Image (tube, rainbow over all chains, first blue to last red; front, side, top):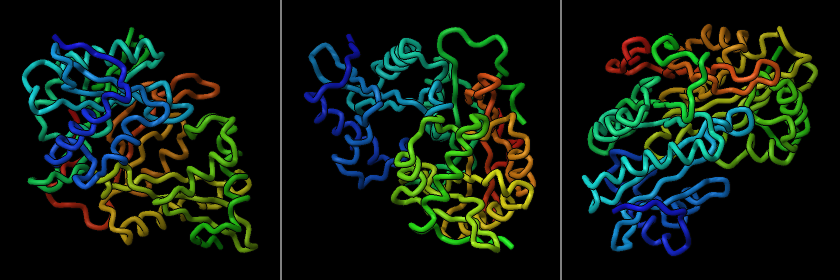
Amino acid sequence: MIHILPAASEHHDAIWHIFHEVIQGGDAYVFAEHTSRAEALAYWLAPGHHAYVAVDGSGQVVGSYILKPNQPGRGAHVANGSYMTASSARGMGVGSIMAEHSIAEAERLGYRAIQFNIVVSTNGAAVRLWQRHGFKILATLPQAFQHAKLGYVDAYLMHRFVGEAPANATSSTESLH
Amino acid sequence: MIHILPAASEHHDAIWHIFHEVIQGGDAYVFAEHTSRAEALAYWLAPGHHAYVAVDGSGQVVGSYILKPNQPGRGAHVANGSYMTASSARGMGVGSIMAEHSIAEAERLGYRAIQFNIVVSTNGAAVRLWQRHGFKILATLPQAFQHAKLGYVDAYLMHRFVGEAPANATSSTESLH
């Protein structure tokens, strides 16, 4: 059974462990492999970020995610989210649980939408996860991610409204130019 | 005659004057009207940003722009740019001069592309300026900008390669889903 809790200082070691593991792959997340613990935690837990951990039945932290404004001021009603799961917990549905939790939490925090700025196109599991949870690809950013093994690969901008979608919002297909 | 120079401390007053003027409109730039001089300059001139000013024949600063990595690490080869022009200098081509300068400068700095994350769709002059300078709309971000007069309006993600476009890059139309 996975529970989601607000991240607290007792979780910092586990967050850094997962963060470090994820960036070593060089295939899913923009932070460079040499990012330090201090840099990683300063980013993940920055003022204004809401940070959460996913904890399994034994109390082990198996994932973490953050929500923050994607832009300041006049763009701050759209959230940006980042998510990571421990490799030891893959296939346990941690990503889906964090996805659903974050959508509800974004609504509770007053956001109108969640946007992901750089979902690596070759990370099929992540792309399918977000699509299952209602996110749409609004753009393909050509060669926007430098993949450790594949070189420059495309990235997706993904988006979904939270709560009720505005009636007058352009759809993801109508809106493309 | 407009010249572009690296921003120096003698330009800070002018940069803040233009920044403050632009955000008062609430129709083009995400920073809130109440952004302070200290916050504005801390952002505009942050470490890692390349900042420039456009200066007219009389030495007056009539515009400013910055280039910075749009993402850390594995996304840092794509630049993000922000540009602003003094209202007193509208129609003098300052935007075009900064646009061309920034495209050349981005290439010189080793970037492969420039991406704008939130071009306000109702700011037709800006959208047309960027299109004239080779930027393409890769996505419409529905209701992503809270316009001071119009409420939530769409914003565009715009992009262009700098230098030679990679032969295997997806085009802006093929890439849309």
